[in-house]
Image 1 (tube, rainbow, N blue to C red):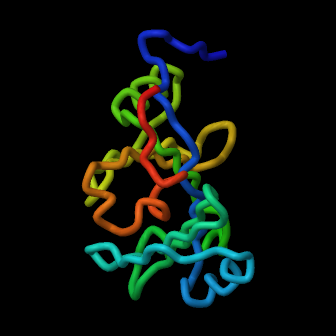
Image 2 (cartoon, one colour):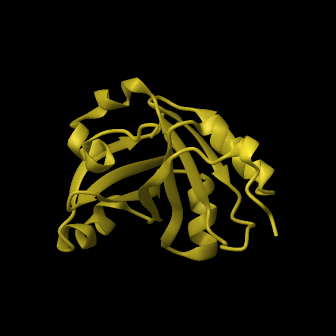
Length: 162
């Protein structure tokens, strides 16, 4: 059983959102609206392979819909194989490099490190005992340019070191 290596302690983290793969955001968001969610952001990625939209429910619950845009993407294959449903759980971390070091020290496989517009991300492979794809995300200072902080961040602000 892996132990927690004190040289590689997991930095503060929290659930930021749950990502749901769907064929079409316009169709799927009707269910989220019926549940009482409010859409706070929608964007098509720069290579135009998929789009995502973020929704809030209450003061801290957040959901994300992700859908392929015309053509092939990782989502097209995912939806063909699995159908719509849970795709990933995103954990906001205060220090992504420290989080990766802690996870790798614990024997977890971390893949897909990327610096995006507003955040840095990496993924814990779903080939782990939970079967879940975990996205690790550290917000950059300019992420708040995307909209209202109360909607963009859990409890209205980015996670901070304790």
